[in-house]
Image (cartoon, rainbow, N blue to C red; front, side):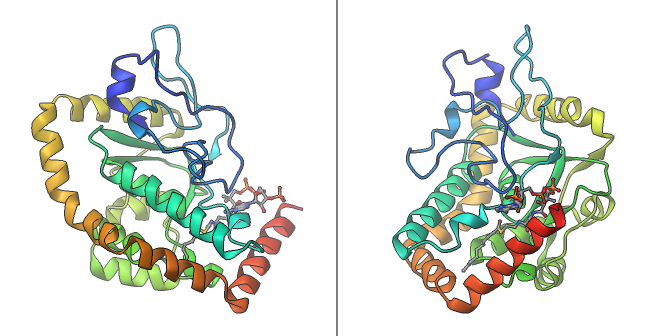
Length: 266
Ligand SMILES: CCCCCC/C=C\CC(=O)SCCNC(=O)CCNC(=O)[C@H](O)C(C)(C)COP(=O)(O)OP(=O)(O)OC[C@H]1O[C@@H](n2cnc3c(N)ncnc32)[C@H](O)[C@@H]1OP(=O)(O)O
């Protein structure tokens, strides 16, 4: 994701959210910032956990392909206490709200798998460019983990791919391969892997060509109702998350899923 203003201006003072991510560390793996301890200054970020810039200040490709984001960090949701879950969920809300409502142009250059929390952050961007690799699935797969996507994940999905497609994909926990993601409108472009970044930059240029104030007001007009819905119910949403995630049956499901992931690796 490129936060346009900072990148365009070279932003020497901006916060580089660098370092190699580890799978599953979203929200921290996505922007690679500790959202649990610091207010997130999205407008100061100019790269994701990717790249860096070359001598002209242009972004260079990240060194960790294959995973755009493995979603939220499941270890943050297993075996912890209610206070931890509440703080974690508040940070997830904050990351999404700031991304979704950012006045910057945000283009997601998706060069790897993009499930669940990864998808929701990509959906908060203005535009998504996905690498054409059959392994790079994108979508909200929560039900396959035995959990449910919260209403604001669902809202973002519906806003992007419509009600029927969301209903089906959410219940099935379906992860779309690139061609289907394009067809359903979950991403805006699918391009060969080595063209993801250049295409994202071209998209960025297209969006930046529009007068900022008009684009920003329009973006806000389109997104405000969805964001307000969460803002009105933030505390209730946190309480709901905590009581849901604390259930023995949910903890068991998550542990089984994590164990499967680890075994698959071996
Ligand atoms: C009331 C509402 C409640 C619910 C609210 C919504 C909650 C959560 C939304 C989410 O985001 S849930 C997370 C969903 N994510 C996934 O299902 C993706 C799982 N991961 C994968 O499928 C794969 O890891 C990958 C992304 C396709 C990458 O594959 P790769 O082969 O490159 O990597 P692995 O070897 O599988 O994994 C490396 C390492 O990371 C661990 N890991 C993977 N994903 C996560 C994760 N999301 N959280 C924590 N840990 C994760 C995996 O177990 C390996 O760990 P180690 O063996 O190295 O310890």
